[in-house]
Structures are given as structure tokens and as C-alpha cells.
Length: 222
Image 1: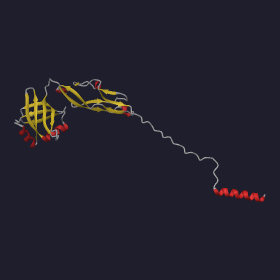
Image 2: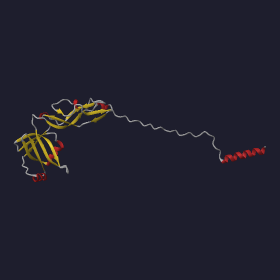
Image 3: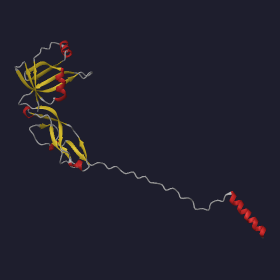
Image 4: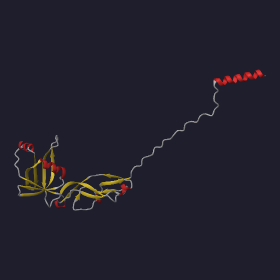
């Protein structure tokens, strides 16, 4: 787990007006608390934004006035509900003999063999809630999916045991590979055009006149 050192000075924050003034000058009020500790200080707001963007799952050594070094984690971030501005950071001092509960992302390794066979990979959950002693804390949990075949699930119980406690039921599904649904082919029947009728064609008016003239000539010959 990454460790970041924060060199700060203890501040006496008097009231809300003082806090507002600090924010206007580009500082974010912070506090570190633990057993018999409640120390207030400020951090440059630019540094705070970098911490929130990249390093929330880190251990922070808060070095106060170059005299006190406290190993902490970032426990809470308070935002302005209207502007999303970061208003306050809470750091919790870690007790080396006490478990800490927090959430970590899941990182998968390899590609499931079921996907190569045409299956569909499905991610059920992306984060795990765990607890661990400070010395055993991790910033993510890796799972190897290479042997996951079509119709199989990867459960919480399949995660290799480490020196931490996963606070989920052992039968919780993390990932799965499902059989792809085959699209039903739509067959369009082609209708044959009706063949022309074989009935005797109806004679035209000119043909009728020719027939009458032929009959008349035959009668005259007789």
C-alpha cells in the first residue's frame, strides 16, 4: 500500500469565519483523530485535489510541526452539496493492533477461457469491503480469471486467503461467464408470383369481324 508523507503545522481554527477565510486563500481544513488525539491542520487545496484524484487508498504519514508522525488513512471527505468543492478531510490514526474496515477495488488478471469459446463475461461486483490490521492493508484485491469457463462463477470463497477478512458472504458471485444467446434467424417466405392462366384468350373485335367475313364468303361460294 502506497505511503504519502504530509508535512503540516498544527492550526488553531477559531470559528466558521476563520474557516471560510482559509478556504478563500486556497486551503482545506483537515483533522486527524485517534486515541486521545484530535489535531486540526490545513492542506493546500491543490494538493488535496491530487490526493483525492489518485491516492485515496493510501497510508498517510501526517508529520505535525516536524515533531509528531502519525500513520493514518483518509477516512472521510466532506463536499459542498451545491458546488462539489472539497470542504474538509478527516484522517484516522491507525492502531497497529486494531483492525480497520474499508473498501477496495477488485482487479482481474487474465482473460477467462470461456470468453475465448464465445461466452460473455459479466462483472457482478467491482469493490469488496474488507478489514485488516494496518500492516496487512492492501489497496486492491486481484483475482485470476483464466480458468473460468462458460457457465461458471467466480465466488468470494475463490479468492486466495490473505491476512485480511472479506466482509461478504462466501457465496457472493464476483464474476461469471454466460453462454451467449443465439439470435433466432428470421426466415422470410417468398411468395411465388401466380403463373399466367392457360385459358383460351378472348378474341378481339377485329378478329371477330374477320371471322364473320370469312363465313360470309363461304356462304357465297355455296
